[in-house]
Length: 530
Image (cartoon, rainbow, N blue to C red):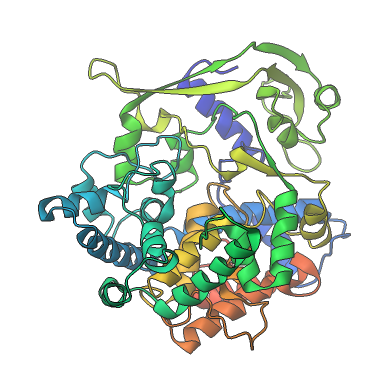
């Protein structure tokens, strides 16, 4: 078991080189062999049963490609600009909201800016509550980090208020919608004026809030209407979408223990994933430690370890609630060099399995304590795949993963649904919903919150791609984007529904992405050229 940052980082990078790194570490640049396999697959020269690899191997290959695509998107101007347009629109709406609530003028700007930040080192993109004025301004800069921007939007839209219920000074878009669309006591005159000044999409919010009020009434007394409840949002799209979302959630399992993070800032830098300046300042402000409850370490062959814990793979074993750490010991020759198997990967000879739950401890750093190098700072971020996993035996997983071949991580993305409702509530700021979708991919793909299919599926429900076109209920993008832009988004989202699953839709996705980012992606893939 690694005892130092250097030792931990070295071992993590060794696993990355073999293609089997920890779940949260994006793989390095795509290899020539991977490029050849993806091209051959897209062009129909190999199939699931081809001798160069089966369905599981190709699905895993595309999962790594999604990591790289998310990192690529985080560096593009379009997604960053869409995220910043949303940030600015949210700032404007919350400023009007603070005025309406009657806060003293000298407090308003500070309260509004605080809405965008949380003091939560366990959440990716959070930067704390220090210097909120400067940090907010930095999010509008041309070189701002997309993860920081989207996390700020996430906080101020709805996430921060979840942890501060009842605190009137915590402003949110959720609060605005509740006060002006769900509260029957809202005054029509002041509401109309506020909606205009705050830049709200009244057509969309009126339709959506009317729908959820009706659902709440059907569920009986005491049920509060909420336009940010994913099952209700799926039902707003269609009965079929509501059923599909329910199946996805039935297949989701909560993980009761969180594995000790094995990633560091250096690992992200090695994978070319940008780390924001505000994130770095925040990460430097803590001392990180972890403790194991009742630890017990034993060494097994891979087969022995899997049999003992009832797991099908080392990846699955790492997700078991009774397993804290899994250390892979690689086979070496007489010169100490790693021995490669027929597939070109390092051979795992034995594994050290430490049983026992792991708890993270983050302590504010004392000025007298030494600062470790930035590259060795561990990441305490707990992201989607560490909170949840998908039951491989669930009906949803058997359909989406086993039959269609799509990578899955945590199920249909409710976060995508909530973020697109927030984006639509403010009139699709910037008018480019596809770029905002790309910002969501940049935010969630590299951290393994969701797979591309899961994000697209949540976005489909908000764009109502499977709804009755004559229903008259608007989608999140209507009223804030041109018909051409909405059409472009819908065409992109519908690609993943194509018959034949991932082998059939992969080349279409690659072509669509290449059209939006000409000359920047490797032909036949969604991996960046550099």
